[in-house]
Length: 256
Image: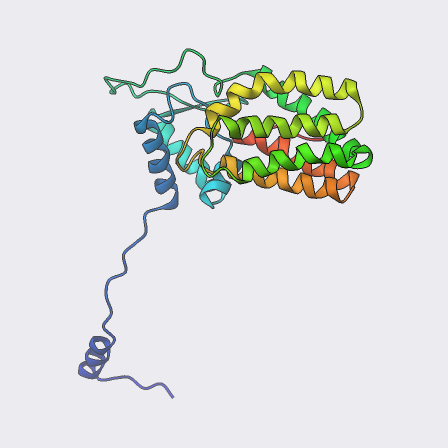
């Protein structure tokens, strides 16, 4: 049976509940747009810098890619970001900004097809090297791999040593493959990427700040597969790591 409260009684019940107005949270896309704008205003993101991919930004902020797209669209409408078809999103400068941040003379994050090609080569070569290392690696060859992971794990803030440890890890895995030609090719591709890795690892903030931690965790997964001598797991883990690394630098690549 439906019972209606008298108007006075209903008013009393509501007052007893002590209901206060609900404050609306800022829209997620607006929050992300403000965070990226703060990176630009602070100079951590400069004119010409490439943003990480939508996939990485969605992971960093814990939102869907649709929310990221909405945030990028907002920044683009305000003249802070420009999207280049098939290339990515880049920081630009508002026409009304009288003192834009000058871009560096060498901007490794801007890149071009050459950087994408290098990541694709790394994905192919290093996935094979990791699989071979899981099969052929000696106990002695495992030690520098473990050491590189420990060096990344023990460093709280990214430094030049973080970059060295990252590159040493990949060189050590390549050496453990037992194929000297493969190891030489991987080393040749790795060294030109030092500046790219260093420039990105050194950037704090919500856009880039989680990158060193993510790379360290992916290295640990590869190490576990190597210790277990699981060639397939090592190949898959290394492939995912290179694809994720490319994403962190703003490049979408496909591992076949």
